[in-house]
Image (cartoon, rainbow over all chains, first blue to last red; front, side, top):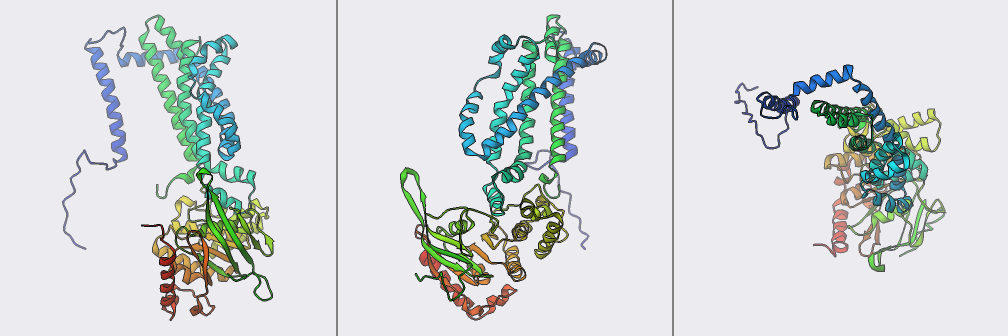
Amino acid sequence: MSDTKRPPARRRWLELRKPVSRTQAILSGILIWTLFFAVWEGVSLAGLVNDLLVPAPHEVLATLGDMLANRGLVSDILISVWRVVFSFSIACAVAIPLGIAMGAFPSVEAVFNPFVSAWRYLPAPSFIPILLMWFGTGETPKIALLIIGVIFFLITLIMDHTRQVRAELVETGLTLGAGRWTIVRTIIFPAVMPNILTAMRQMLAVTWTYLVIAEIVASTTGIGAMMMRARRFLHTDEIMAGIIVIGILGLGFDILFRMLHRWLFPYTQERGS
Amino acid sequence: MTDATTTGAAPAKLVIERVSKRFPMKGGREILAIEEASFTVEENEICVILGPSGCGKSTVLRMIAGLETPTTGALRLDGSAIAGPDRERGMVFQAYTSFDWLSVRGNVEYGMRINGVPKDERRERAQRYIDLVHLAGFEDAYPAQLSGGMKQRVAIARTLANDPALLLMDEPFGALDAETRWHMQELLVAIAEAANTTTVMVTHDIEEAIFLGDRIVFMSAHPGRVHRIITPEFKKGRRYASKEAVLDLPGYSALEKEIMGLMREQGGKDQH
């Protein structure tokens, strides 16, 4: 073995397309957020902005803690989460079987696709007035809006993923003696499932968007309604606390889906990772 | 072309009789992909379909599998007409077809599972074929953890464990690197000997065709025709376990050059 030491390659901070280490990635992420809150805090302390419109971050966090502990924010959160989970479950219960059927059988696609793809171009919030007329102000119009907002995109995504299941997999099944339904059940479905879960993760984020719209426009409960109430009393800190809660919930569900993906489909992980 | 459907007493295992295939094109026109192809495959034979690109060799194989239907002509396996795909004719593709969500054992058991083979028998037969393709120790591995050559061995074991009358292979080693490729070719000879398979394989690799083929069906392009049926006489009806042994035989180079000449002459008409 030779003893000559090569000088350690100097690692520049700006390296073209070199992956960064996990530690560096985490530190960089923390850095940018710290910077954001530091600037915000600094601007507030220095009195550069109107305290009524832009409260300092520590005040927002204090308000958030108080709302969680004493002012019933938890029940608003629970009702919002329930609305999202309930309507998203209904959307999935329809979209998954229909999307797979459309992707697997062109005759089914020929029937439903002209219908589904047209609906995608109708903005869901434009249905709010008519939903209120039909269903009043209860839970139904909110659930309906959330479903309308995601179901057609979800169907299309699942159909596309199903169509992309490679022909050779299906033909392998055929030459092993599998019939149509066996192929849908034992090849197409398991092959497309990981992609369906990813599509669900993406569309769940969109469901949160429609939730806030529904709660702001026509609700007395939920996080969105709480924020609209706060606006009336110029409680900017409460509005910001609401935004933070929604962000954390969205992130939480996203992480949940990623974990679910890793747990359900461990085989999609590449060798050595 | 001579009628090869009745050679002596026993009819051939697989008979392809004056098969033509036309594909519709845009504007109502049709393209003649295969014209009046005829050949037979005997029990336990390795029959290699070889030819330049565009000769329709994969289409012929797909018609044997039942994945395409001939426009005219007939295909018969053990005397009965081929109508659609079934487990009698198992296919291995060039693209990897491992079921990623199943372990190696799950993949090899798949055909038996959907065809209702009882669990104990399934286990036992799967293990036999896993051993045969040298994947013992990898039973619980998932395809994402396997190399390309291993994935193709899973596909071969999966097809054979389902006990088909014919093993069909469409350039099964085409995506593999050169070294893995000749290991796989030698493995295929060993499998054919051990499992008594009747194999029809498509390739464009001349060396592979001569090493593996008990018989070579050479096809020419535009339209695809059976140009010549070649029996590598120099192998004297034997199979060899190693590739070098065949490359060293007198007569190998002559046949290789002859087929290269055919490739030049019959292919490439519309290329460059």
